[in-house]
Image (cartoon, rainbow, N blue to C red; front, top):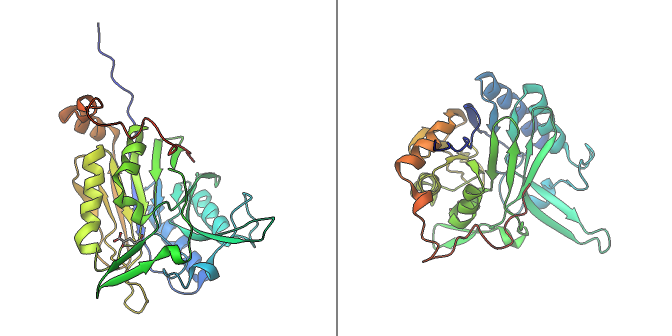
Length: 307
Ligand SMILES: NC(=O)CCC(=O)C(=O)O
């Protein structure tokens, strides 16, 4: 009997671009600059374009409330969320899938008027329709003496759902944000549910960036035999937070296909479903797992609230 070949997770090859964007304090200027850079990225032939974490504001707890936008009910009005409408237009005008980095989100309880803030990523289709929303699940709370202390949870609340977004032309993509990359279970669950790529808008810093950014990108790729894209803001030494930069794309064998420096840049890579299948045939982890010895983290639990 002929053995059946599994369908490719990525239906056809696609160019993905990470836009390592320089942003400042002026939101309108940031949105205009993002639109210019997304157009430039699309002109390279990229059909999936990724922006960085907090692309429309400086990154920091002091900034989240004043830059936050209301996203629900969806679609918001242009007054509630200029960034939502700017991202939708960028996707539509360039005929691309746009993984729109992240923005601070404000959710106001209609009964109590209590305000809750999230770090939220929006993904749009080439027709400008919202395909998925990810609220950062793992908040960036760290303290490394004499180096860096950061506590997103002082202001932000965590999201509670893994996000898998179907891109009709290509397949499923998993979107998570920055510190989420440190949690391998999240990536593994997304990969076992069939994504071809794990995409993380991020903003690592100059202490952990050199040690962990590339390593984590490669680790998530080699663990899961999928593509990984990490997209950072450009470094700005005049800002309060110094982003690491080094946006990159890693292939399913953990080879870094492309990596930016610290300044503004657009990096692109071709993703091909055959590469995922080759990696999985050559090193057949998927057939060798020992769920009789350890549990399958993707089998149970509440993590599955997809886009
Ligand atoms: N914005 C973030 O989540 C930063 C994460 C980070 O720098 C890390 O070391 O993790």
